[in-house]
Amino acid sequence: MSLSRRDFMKLCSCTVAGLGISQAFNPDVIWAMKEGAKKAPLIWLQGQGCTGCSVSLLNTVHPSIKDVLLEVVSLEYHPTIMGSEGQMALEHMRHIADKFAGKFFLLIEGSIPTAENGLYCIVGEEHGHHITMLDLVKDLGPKSLATVSLGTCSSFGGIPAAQGNLTEAKSVMQVYEENDIEKLTVNVPGCPPHPDWMVGTLVAAWSHVLDPQEHPLPELDENGRPLLFYGENIHENCPYLEKFEEGELAETFTSEGCRYELGCKGPNCFADCFKRKWNSGLNWCVENAVCIGCVEPGFPDEMSPFYVEG
Ligand code: FSX
Ligand code: SF4
Ligand code: SF4
Figure (cartoon, rainbow, N blue to C red):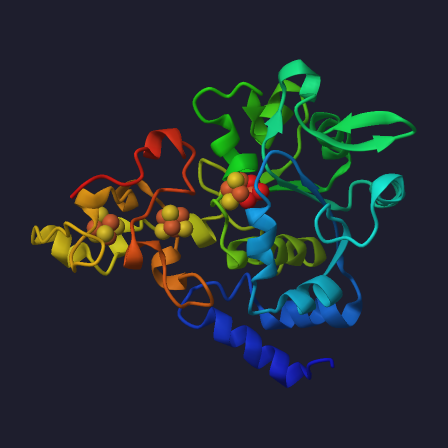
């Protein structure tokens, strides 16, 4: 059953309440996309990751994943959720990349292994020849309108690029730089990223395409992250800040007090988890554990150990 415009607007305004993301979730824009059938063509590739970014996206609540997938975007290729597979799926992806050359968004989840010519991540087979993630990224990147790196792995290398890194895993920006691919690339890190960060970034980018005057491109920080979601420091906005300043430091996860001595990386981390929260706004890392700094370029090596004894 399709939502009425009124219900849809109500749904969207619930999301924006108090979060300062009305630009990204402008209900009028989303409605216009639904009505105008001007859906953003997307091709989603998965390299070295855990699929957590996709799972997180499927948890989007406002708007629902059904609305996003059926009415806002046109997701033409996604290894986990598409119905098609094999050569037929790859052929469709190639067809879309040509048909919408310069007009589709390339979404990349997971890092890109570059050792042995990318052989550590084979994502398909065409006419009896394997296709590596590296091949696909190098081929589709230049054809896209813009690239969005979803998750810390594609944004900064993340877990696959951690110490050791036998596969020489790299971020999308690194691969683009090394292969002279000049393409606007936005990073939406998080391991995994919050569904609002992904949907909000896509909506903001597509709004800009539809009406550049009305919707300027969201401002990015020096790490290519939209300030809309990554502009505030977790520690400075944490409900435990007062306890931190008073020296009330928790020694166990079950005791009250700031989690600094348990390993919290909030002071070095910029994201709006403290107000957006996770699991439909139910809770967030610092409430039950610590922030492990999952949105930062140094994650996980520079954020380790995640937990320390209080
Ligand atoms: Fe990486 Fe996506 Fe961490 Fe996982 O696949 S950002 S490992 S939560 O989900 O790329
Ligand atoms: Fe800062 Fe973490 Fe303490 Fe919150 S719990 S005040 S983010 S150190
Ligand atoms: Fe990542 Fe920290 Fe936010 Fe948790 S609180 S999601 S570890 S940035």
